[in-house]
Length: 356
Image (cartoon, rainbow, N blue to C red; front, side, top):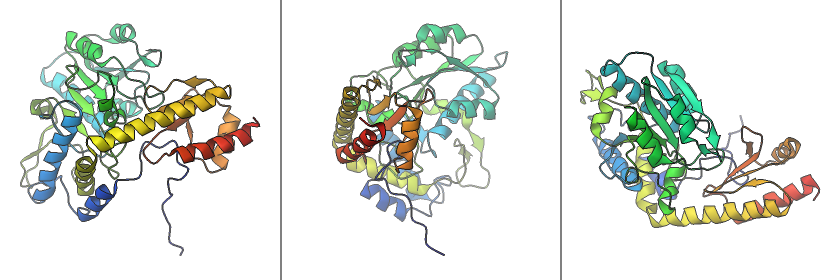
């Protein structure tokens, strides 16, 4: 049987994962057989996870943050909803819990609502961002969580996080920020998005995206360890007596690679990657606009452009891994593996397909 080989990244323009940093890859290989879900047995990887959370907290404006390395943004978002639901349950509030999110929120919140039996309320957007007035109309006494996105997956927009946090707390709800993709770019911008900028309670921030760790290596952060208490369950046969994670066995490779990547790249390597990605996004947006294509201005390094569905389909047939927004626009994410040379080749093919 012919040996299968993984797809390379030479024409991948839609993924929010990327080629791992060499140090992250090496660290992952060393810790392949370890399980941070059992830190009493695997003490070294348990210590590394503590370091990973500290480093993520530093990126996110709160070095004293609590949290853990999750499988990805979906798990972290589910856990944030679970924290809020369980906290409200423990307070014995009446009524069915609901979570208010902008329309731009990741589909993982739909999964969270289904798994946790909470009502999901999606508020319309204004200029691709959360509309505060629209969100407030959906909040009531049974709202347990209000969500803002710091780097939306379709348009790369940043919601008004401080205002969302204030709104959530006015109604006695928690505030969660989904910075799964944007968290490793936003430290080098002027946006207000993190624990230092706003009274947010929990955050999703993923090392395996712009952080250049191996998959899987997501991240859940909380302002305090007490916020994780509603997740805790007894683990009687382990040396650790309780557990706040969603999964039991977890990837030591992901934990070790996250630490290795952040040690190698924070802050200067990440700053350079973010600046290059933004330059590439603005360059591609300009080139597309010059061809008469309607483009959503790239606030973060993600380009959305109104190309015909047939054109996008033909480019995919040519081997380009591109995707579409919910509205059908071309979506290109400027991950660290995306180079100007790749983008030039993509434009050459687009010119031929479009007949410009």
